[in-house]
Length: 120
Image (cartoon, rainbow, N blue to C red):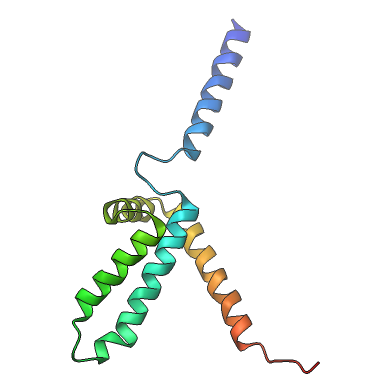
C-alpha cells in the first residue's frame, strides 16, 4: 500500500509539473511573443513620435498598417497576437520574463549605440 501511495504522489507531481510548460492552443511561445511585441512597441513609438506630428496622415490607420506588416513578417495573425497578449497579461510571471528580456535587449542596443568609438 505504501508503494502505491508513493507511486501515486510521484505521478501527480510529474503531471502537475509537466502542465506548467505547456501553452494553450493558439498562444505564441514566449520567444515569438517577445519578438512580435518588441516590433509592435517600436511601431507604436514611431507612430507617436513621427506620424502624429504629420498632419497629412492618420496616426491610427498608419499604426494599423505597421502592425499588419509586423504580423506578416512574423507569420502570426492579429488574433493570435492579441489572444497571446491577453494570456500573458494574466500570467504575470511569464509576462515579466518577456518584458525583462525586452528591457535587457533595449539596454544592450543602447550601450552599442552610445559606446564611444575607439581609435585604432
